[in-house]
Amino acid sequence: MTVEAAGLILPSDVLIIVMENLGIEDLINLSYTCKFVNLLVHEFGWSLYLGHNVRSSFTLQLARRSWSSFDQVRYDVASDRCWAHAKFNARPLSHPWRNKLQPIIVLSASVLLVAAGHTIYVYHITGSSSLDDGAPGVLYEGSYSFTDRQDITSITFIPDGHSERTVAVGFEDGHIHRVFLPHFQQEQSNNKSLALNIKRDSPLGLRIMDIVESLTCSDDMLLSLSAFGTAGLCNLSSDSPLVSAINLDCRSWSSFICMRSSTPFTAFGTTSPNPLVVHAITPSSLSPAPFAILHPTRERSTAVYDITDAPPSAPWGSSKQIIVSGWYDGAVRVHDMRSGRRDSGVTGSPAPLRPMLTFCDPWSDEPIYSVSCGGGSSSFVAAGTARHSVVAFWDVRCATEGWSVHAPGNDSSPVYSLVLESSRLFGVTQSRPFVFDFGPGVTKETYPSLPISTRSQHDSLKLKKNGVGYCVTQYNHSRT
Image 1 (spheres, rainbow, N blue to C red):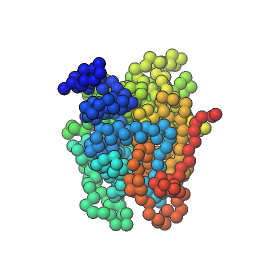
Image 2 (cartoon, one colour; image 1 turned 135 degrees about the horizontal axis):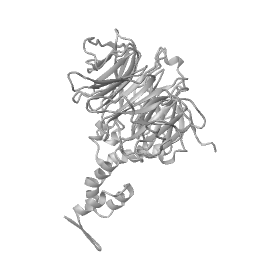
Image 3 (cartoon, rainbow, N blue to C red; image 1 turned 90 degrees about the horizontal axis):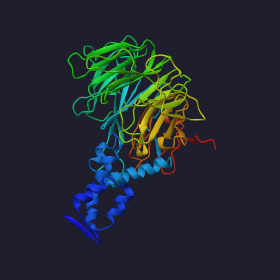
Image 4 (cartoon, helix red, strand yellow; image 1 turned 60 degrees about the vertical axis):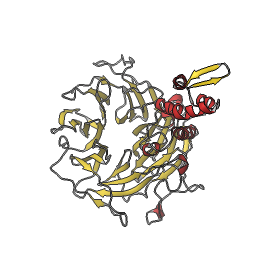
């Protein structure tokens, strides 16, 4: 079919090709030309735009399957506008725990898990049939307790069909186990944790003799790292899962694995003269020697506490060669392993690679305990600091204009773990998990309500007048 207008005769397939290179304003203007082109934009234009502007978001995946392409774009535009003005709803996801813990938060398309102490708290993700029905919810489902284990020190989702409820769990005593979290058959009474028994005869990978500090997974490969530097690589699809193990011989904090890079690799964050190193993964082993050393600047920093990668549609590109890390000196650094920016003043091989970008809060030099990337236009970096439950944000398009916010409750805790999506940031302190939601359609029912209890009487939370978000303290990084 062709479109005829004054001086214009174009077949619809040519118009569809033109739409591939159009932005939001151009697509809107094009849709105003006539009824047929309007239908063409809604049928093809918005889906093409979404294909070129992928927004990474676990909690929106189920809802987006029901939303039209136009509604998805509407949601993204509204969310981006809130990111640009640092406007969000802050919500705690629970009352404070009775003890101070060092928790971890992980997220899939169906559940949010918070591992704290010997308990895993489960929040299920709800759908939304249309954008007008409100934002998808994240609601408390229940909890599982490991009564015969020490504290959980690491957790990550691992492949298991389409259930998205199978995790690898590392413990303080060095055990690593595969755990399936079944759906609860009935609502829990009095919020008592259900005990989940783990068989001792089915460990994953090698038995580490000290704390399992980090677990990360990519495709079918699971990477484990102990506190004193033992790294193990396991093939989860193999009957004999352990592939290789190396020893870094230093205090170790974080690990990252990428099997989808042109050269599969692992990255390790440690306390050492070279606190961020990258090792290649061969078909048969994990290379014992690093092929890249990532330095901060000519002045060395002593430790790296967290490592992540960039989202698919980040402004700096979707390359798997980009590594984002949080450092002891309070900086977040971005290294591009394709770069030729080497530190020529340092001897040794390979020559250390210098960062392409460095972010810091000029008002704070607290160590960075957690990092994650995503946010509006996939262009934000979030960092959890070591004190006062502060999360710092930077837009990579204007790196000097960052801002920070305290988590609900303003406790003195580090932010131990973060997951940043397109419109939501999930984090956890020593006291509880929380969320900052930048998207539209958030209501009182989107997240768990916090009924009055004995613990809430000593809580410092203050609800905003809108009855949805809680009051939090924000400040800009600018010195002017």
